[in-house]
Image 1: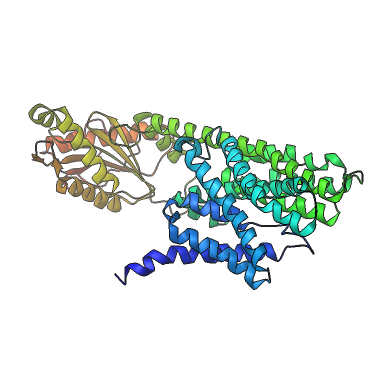
Image 2: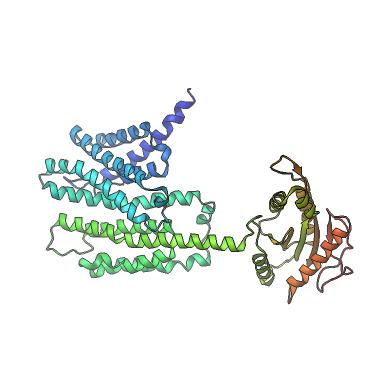
Length: 487
């Protein structure tokens, strides 16, 4: 029981700490006799509850409520103000969470075409709830029109939700991506080629400062669209967050000149709302592009992969091997080995146990083989029970040892049919190694490996045979350093 207590309250303590820090940051941004200019706590709390549904429990909600109260208390808010502001914050977060739960799971995905519109509706509802509760406090203390205070509160909350929630959702997707570590590698040449859209965004902000006027807020739009077509959702949402804070900071400091016909509150409210709505277009383009990239990736995978064994399809294997053979070789190049292999007595498995058992045997063999290969090796299913493997930059001896490990991996694997029958499969492998990869290298290697495979079958199966030039169908340029025999 005692062990379960930390597990129960640790998430609440973590969320409470995050909310407290964000709330203190917002309180310190308060101008004299006004409310916070930057208040990220509500959007961060809502993002945490949405991204991690397990956090939506009573202890976490109580911790968040307590964190808001504590932040107000340590910064000197009186009791009425503290409780009222906390109620407004919690009303906004609670409304946003309920609205999010009303949206279909598929439509919540950031790569859904309508995701940004649903996001706007959720953020609008959350901002309206917070404004309805909190605007009365503004009128009570500062004596301004409740209508004006409502719209100031609403536009401020809407801006924070729309800007911060996409970052939370994108971070969740990024964290799930197994390639996340690639973000921290040194930028490649391809990365540097993606910098011009970001540079154009910086130039557009400078133009907004230099030119000013009512249209200055729209100057970054072309650059944002260029960025939306170039970057994925996470970097785009981070850029929009940075742009939003930069533009608001420039406006507050007077670097972006707003016509004096408007008073400060009206111009600030209009600027925030315009900036919020402005970023919806680029965000929508980004989500649509992400969806398109995902669909193209799925299509490419379907075309390039064998649907049964998940190895490369015949055409994809041959194309990728050709590319591998044509590329420039590293200094101490060890050569290329090509293996042709197939399952022994595969027809008997089909006839005796059925075609489904044969499929299971193919899948089990492919799994055993791919689990033994190096990351740089290529394996493709050429048809039926026949596979081909390309081993790049490998010595003849290393290729022979690896081929033997492949044979043993398949031999030791078990295939359990639906009836509970345990099947065992073996493979025969023909191996060829070469250094001269010019001209019709792939055709020659395939022919030589096929000849070695034929010899392995003739010698009794379940063995590795290395190509010898004396074999029938020998090709020029293939290595002939060993007589055929089991390795």
